[in-house]
Image 1 (spheres, rainbow, N blue to C red):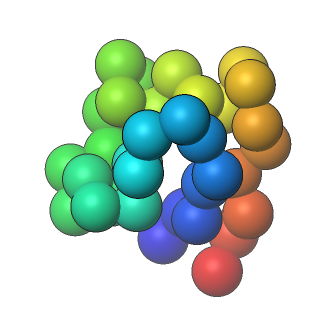
Image 2 (image 1 turned 180 degrees about the horizontal axis):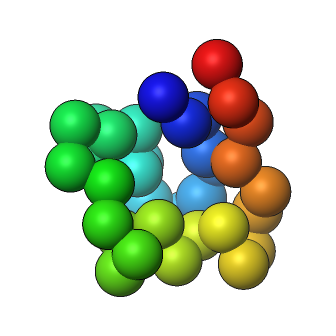
Length: 33
């Protein structure tokens, strides 16, 4: 799973992480947990 800190809670959509929803990777690097 990936924990990511963005302007929106992408952690809520962690069950369905897609490239579109995980675009926060460019803003904040996700943390592998």
